[in-house]
Image (cartoon, rainbow, N blue to C red; front, side):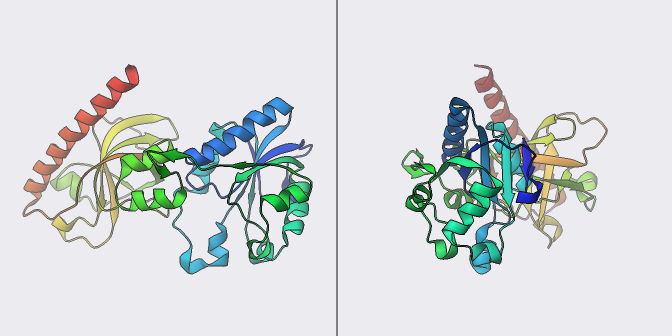
Length: 312
């Protein structure tokens, strides 16, 4: 997959495209339907499958006080798009100048110009251009074949980035995963902790998440991956400020449930599978350690169940 951020650095010889356009934060099951349909039609028509997305999110420029905490980093979003079969991504650096473009100027500059688009897929409520005056009818009036997507539902709930943010912020990871089509994941470098875990409880990997959205404080069953080597471990993760040790800084600490071999990962991806319990203060480190081993037993049972389901 080829990624570019301006018309001047687009790949040479870029063919005509079928474009899915949107922010696509979370690349949830609704986004997957839009993008999947665009990829399928591109293959049928012998065109290239492309995505036009935005970085930063338009709300950061238009209304920073109400800008959402993004579910994914740009890197996570690009990886999800590539997995769906997208060939080209135009990651448009949204700015105040772009926000001032009329719908016609936007189409001529980015869809017809940077992306020689013939067909566009958007959500049925998609708006673009100055004061959000462009819509599906505008795109059609400018000569594009347009396919508006309809909402995708799961058990009566519409798949939306807003709903997923609310679920993750509340620690409801199973529901969030249903709407995302995959577990919510944090990604980032492993950083040095204060050594409390290795001395008084259990050793952990301390993650400095690059994501804006962080799950609610508490203990979670997780799966941890080293993206450099694809090593993967069953794990359990605590988010919070370590009240037993009077901590004040919020941390993300992951305990691996299976043997760990060197080298230590420089970065990790942590998939959140299930909420276990709230973080709380224990009278002694020994009591915390006993609780951790109870949490580990809970996590191991879930991981074994997931392994059986995967093998069925």
